[in-house]
Length: 125
Image (cartoon, rainbow, N blue to C red):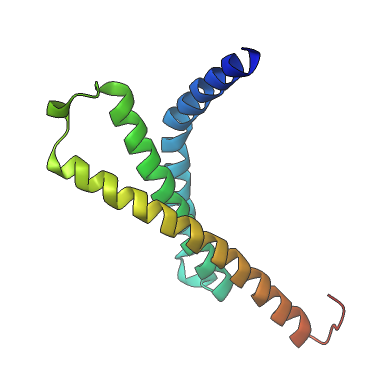
């Protein structure tokens, strides 16, 4: 019984957290992407970081939109349209692709750092 109560509290906290922090995260990621596209700081690392911010914005954006829709409206068929059905299908697929893409971008960053360290004469990693 204790774990069931704890589980229900966890979902309430997580849903509330997504609804209020999601839009803030999206705005901050847009600001970061704006900064990273400046001509003065355009490098390989910053391009990869830009792509990671874009992936995170897509994932958090679709989660936030989905949370707002499910929290504001009842789950009855006449609230939902074909557009919403397509959005759900595309967002679920895109969310998984973006998560995997962000993971591989982190691997690419680690590889770029390794190559950079090795090319500057340091053999210790």
